[in-house]
Length: 111
Image (cartoon, rainbow, N blue to C red; front, top):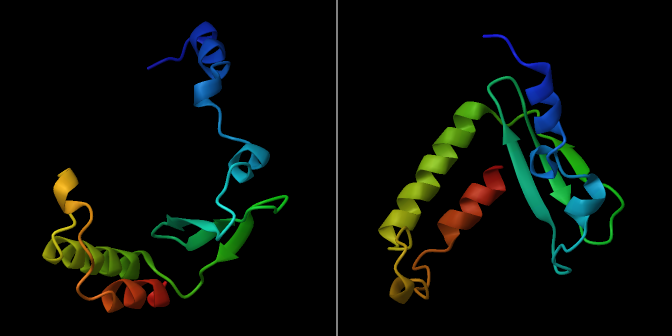
């Protein structure tokens, strides 16, 4: 399938299809802690920490973390949330407290 130059140039001019700049990502962050974005791939894993007041995102290599381990932890967390009845979208269940918060801590420690 051939690409049409006029369509490609029109699409790339749309602001919604451009990746955000670091400054736009870092503005409006919560002041009480970082926002961490995990990049999990079969080849390598890393994270970006977005910290309020920082000039640029902090890149965190995760050389000992693997795609396989990420899938295992995702499945554990999914099962935990399902067992705690928080994997629902009903408003009346949104305020339930976790019965075993140690599972979430275990998953985060292993990342």
